[in-house]
Image 1 (cartoon, rainbow, N blue to C red):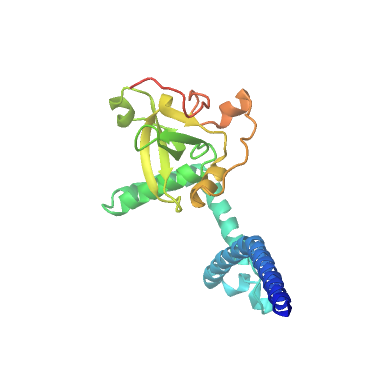
Image 2 (tube, rainbow, N blue to C red; image 1 turned 30 degrees about the horizontal axis):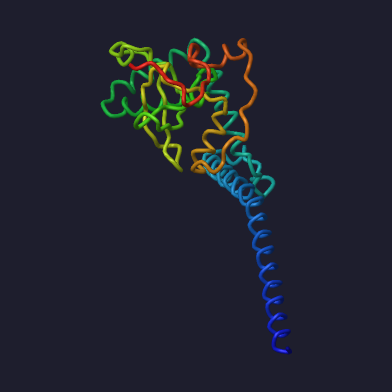
Length: 252
């Protein structure tokens, strides 16, 4: 009888220690999940600000650098100088002489065999990403790929124009399909409008879903926007409204 109670006591002790270890592990993971994203974001922002400050501090004359008089660095001062410099450049290029200078400099770049390709590609990419009037990557869609019945998540970049649209029978749109878990790589597809399923999730939610391999998904679709607001920001007016995945479509 005594051995039975000793065994029962050891079992209860093991169970108690096991429960405590499970709780400690859960608390540790919860703390890591809460603090790691914020810490990594702050650290990345600090690295960027420090990088800009050091580069700007090297080219800034000492008499214009507050560190010369204060004997310590002001975090973010270089970033502020860079922002003001870009604003000044943008203001100067808005005038007549500024536009003339831009045309002359672009003409010089376009005459260089290798430089013109790099310059043109970078200019188009930055214009598509930074332009406020651009409708790039503002809508998530489902595309049936690589065969019927399988779907991939994509982002509409623009309505297709030029030779690609001219040689296709249907009106197509440019869809970027990212890879998981790195959404910066992927491939471009030209898809007929009627073959797309437009989603109500935002681009940010779609990117989170791609990065997490589907583990992070929006709980419910946001409310539909009005027609007036949609007409201002939607890059693909005329696309069909969202429909169930099982809806039959006309054969092409």
